[in-house]
Length: 373
Ligand code: ZN
Ligand code: ZN
Ligand code: ZN
Image (cartoon, rainbow, N blue to C red; front, side, top):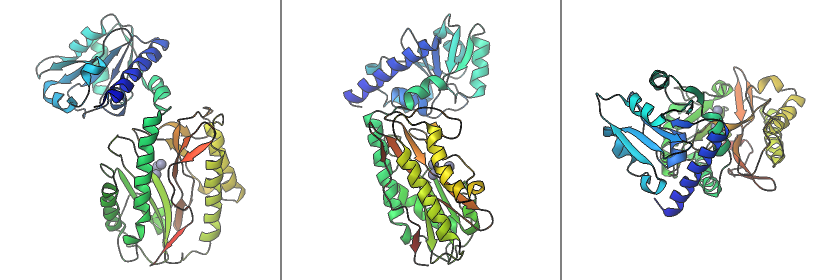
């Protein structure tokens, strides 16, 4: 790992320590996952054996890891970051090890994704310490992407755009959603992701279920098909983009007019994104356009979610979130209109707030794409 990267990570560790101190925590305990990757540049998987970064606000960070999992952290620049490795072997009590590191801490912020299995064992091992969630502290950092993070999201956005551009190769009448989905998944990897994280192919009535996966339904001529796909690139940052296709001319007569409303709503919401605007204002912008056209009851989810090292993270673009947008915040703008039993449509772009407005990271056309049946 380069010096630039380890400098950046060391600065992150310092910032998160300061933020934890400001939140009156003495230490943080962070499990494998996106938080750990954000802080030290790598993460393995967590099993029943305890792995965690113990990050005191005053003192050196220690990565507690089972000896057999330690090779998974070989890429982490521990020396440059000042992170000490503390390994343990089966038969030892890792909670006593962590208790020793936490010393006289009275308030410990545990990562949101630390398994309850470990949280409760730590509570027993350190009975004098109150446990609070680390998420509120970490999200303040993770929501504000630096230039390298935005560059990784841009790479991911371009990669998923290349997959959507090839949709006519796979999506046609007579194939099942699952067959189309398998081809899309392979293309997600071929176009530059490390894996396909999700592939939604919602054809005909299945398109009315926003989180449909794939099924054995055979796609028919005249179907409207929602394709929502994404995955991580090498840096760990995710793509997530939806386009809606028609296989031949749509059979339902109301598709064109309804889709035009959706397209106007998505466009208006993207255009509304700027520093100083609140997340709920962006949601309301999309929702108002759809409601004004009489489709309000068919837009059944929030307008968007933050994205980064997780597919879904803060900030959420939802009613009630008065968070003021700042440069570097990245999230989806993905209104949908779902007609139960018939068809559905969604348009989703990832956008980044800039100093003056917004940068969309997905550039494919927003029109309903009519493919040959
Ligand atoms: Zn979703
Ligand atoms: Zn999304
Ligand atoms: Zn999506």
